Each structure stands twice: as C-alpha cells, then as structure tokens.
Image (cartoon, rainbow, N blue to C red; front, side, top):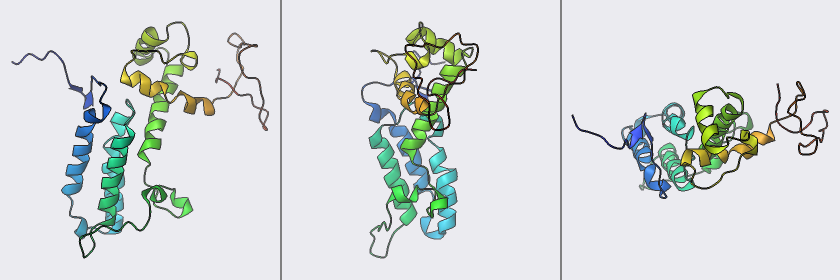
Length: 213
C-alpha cells in the first residue's frame, strides 16, 4: 500500500491552496469542459440545453463554492464555455452570441432565462457558511474556526489577519453580505453594546445590527 504524506484533495476539494489560486481550480474547469464536449449540442433543443446547463453544469462547482471563493478568471472561463455551448455553432463555424450572458442570468420573471451567476452564487454560499459561524457555535466547524481565528470575539467582530487559510479568507470576505441582512432583535440585553452598536432605525422601526435570539 502506497503511503500518502499529503492529501491533495479531500471529498473533491483541494486541501492546500497556494498563491496560484487559478491552477488549483483547473480540475473544475476541465470537468465542466469534458461534460460539455460529451453532449451533442446540435441534437439538443433549447429547452434541453437549458435543463442540462442548470441541472448539471452549474451544479458541478456548488460544493466547491461553499468552501472557497472561485477566482474571477476561472468563473469567467466557465461562463464563456457555458455561453458557447448555449448558442451553438452557426453555418460558417462561428458562434454568434445574440445576448450577453449576464442578461441571460437575470430572473425569468424579468423575461430572461434565470441561469446562475456563479460569482453571485459563490458569495451566497460563502455567506451561508458565515451564518453558521455566527449561530452554530457548538458545531465542530465553528469551534475549530473560532479557536484558530477569533478566539476572543464573535465572527462579526473578527479580523482577517495574516496567514489564514484560503477557506477562512473566502468566508470572511462574505461578512459584508451577511451584515446587510442582519437586524437587532433584543433578547436578554446582555450582549448590547450601547456605545458601539448601531442603533439607527429604518422606515419599519427595525434597528441595524446583529440578530440576537
């Protein structure tokens, strides 16, 4: 049996991410490329392409996006491959994109197709992990991250610091998104900081700040 000193991947996710983030996610891009090449786009209708892209291609990076922030370059390459498959080949061999991909990612209620914007979806998934760090304090995930990165404060008051893992940097980067949707709900009053917390009400009488149960 071969001895393995360092596991490059665990559950399909790279365990070590160096300075070159783009090279780490090459496997993700290659996996999507192979899927697209295996489908006969000329034999598929528009509805069939839409189902395959939403159910398969845009679902492949979901697990990875819940742990790491995918570099913009990799996200743009995946978007380009998806757009080329959607529009298909023309008679002269070129690919004419009649609408921008950002427009196709708009919701169907606005008359568009509702494809996922991978960068926005990535931020939402990382925000979900940040929510767990804030509320699931007894989970192994929260206890490990808190003991290493913010042992003396909660997640909202934590600092990015230096030398943190790429996973911590990715999750911490979504903190601003989390703060946009948090409001005060006064509980037992033990965590209210009168001089530090923002006590500015909105038009519905709510106060901006951390959600307290």
